[in-house]
Figure 1: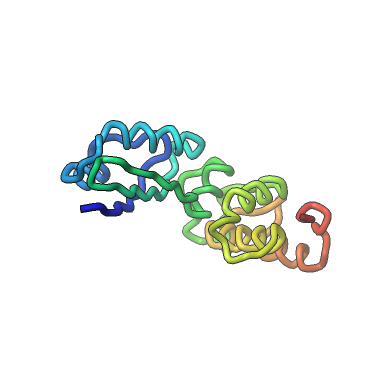
Figure 2: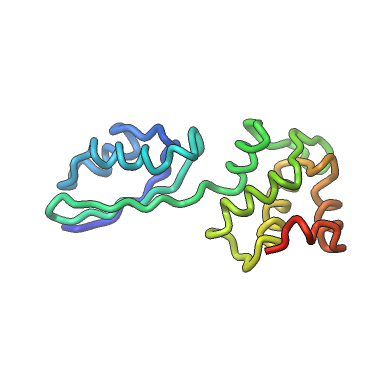
Length: 158
């Protein structure tokens, strides 16, 4: 009866209730042990929704793999706001520094399609565009153009 369970849990705050409890209840694993390990491994993503996969065997053993939160969640956490702008082209809700964009790109790099930090940062900038977040006080589309023009090559050098 080995199986896999995939859930989204708040980082560092998983508990035996939904969505984990009902999924783990019928399995042979110790639910408290699973919850504790998930909380230990997701503590760095405090409060953010984190994708978690639990694989278990018939003998009660289990392994946990923790994914990276969605880029939008990382941007919201880094910039300190709850919801994006209803009009992201006109009304901006927050501002990030270039270093914050780089940090988010590094955190998310394993899940992005990019092969390098420069292009990973461009994907983060795209998310900023849809959320209504400026970068260094500039519209994200303008910032992306400045990236393409080489203005930030030194910041995103590998």
